[in-house]
Length: 442
Image 1 (spheres, one colour):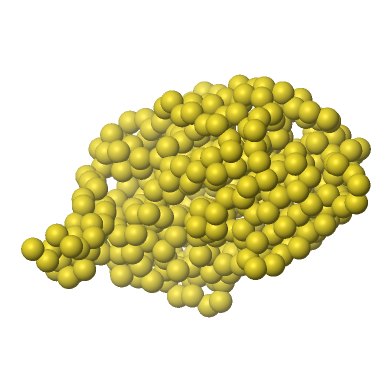
Image 2 (image 1 turned 90 degrees about the horizontal axis):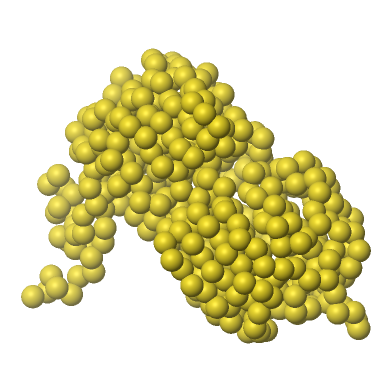
């Protein structure tokens, strides 16, 4: 009877060393979709977003918008949003604490309403991601911003109703700060120039989305973005770009299992640094059309990786490539320069037999002949994907716990892998002692 009181948890069981084959459909980009959903607050008319991935983070952002009074309807990968009657009510800390991207609403709300309160954000525990760049940018545009009691209170200063255009230099090319300032500037008076802006594809997607509603933005994708404020934005129907990190993860899946697989739809330029590094390791990546890539396996050799802002190697692919390099002949060095706490998956890969040493933000990887299946725990979103990849290549059975991380950022990953031939399944088990017994017996 006591067993019924235990909570259920979900795990992934993976039987490794099964070759993959076929084509995988890449979902819409999580990081782009979240920013676009926040950007819809700028428009008082209907907005339609297409190609939205089915993710826990998207559901949380939907709840955040709903708490602000936004009308939302979802039908498959289409999201209809109407932010005509947004109020000055704020999303709860409980909602915002689970999703860092929810903080993005501060720029659009301030631009639309002239005042807003937003709790400080949460998200993956991968290191400090302060909001000071966001705050300084809004202050430069004439906002009075105070942080007290765990929330940010921002309002337009004096008798003005709108933010004012400004020249803003970012000390670091932060994606979040660039997006916050760009959204706020779309409805500001005059011209705003963001220097040392982030150049990620998600920045271009947000700019294109805002321009489709009538915003005037130039230079997105370069280090200088110019926004000429307009008084009002209008209705739009817009498709989210494909997820470059999901695509990169599947490229590594092909490489680590010595399998040839195709990916569609993708934007190859968004993956340039990951493709170059993959080819340095050995596998070939060919472009089979404007939106299609194919990975061709080859023997794996070591290489060095340093994570950097776009167009450099993405921090969101570091864990997946580390999994690949554990099986690559020779030595590799991985330097994580973007987040200071993003090597926690090392201990889990070591449980599978990986030879990795860590010194500060640098991981020294010595390739081993094989990995062995083991029970492992996901520590963050991309680490969870790395453990799945390692499980696909390992001898025997791997059990991955902590799937709440995986479900935040990968749309039905195990089903897509199963369609490629992977021997993988999601299982509900009881937490507590019964789970321990189940894992130790596996």
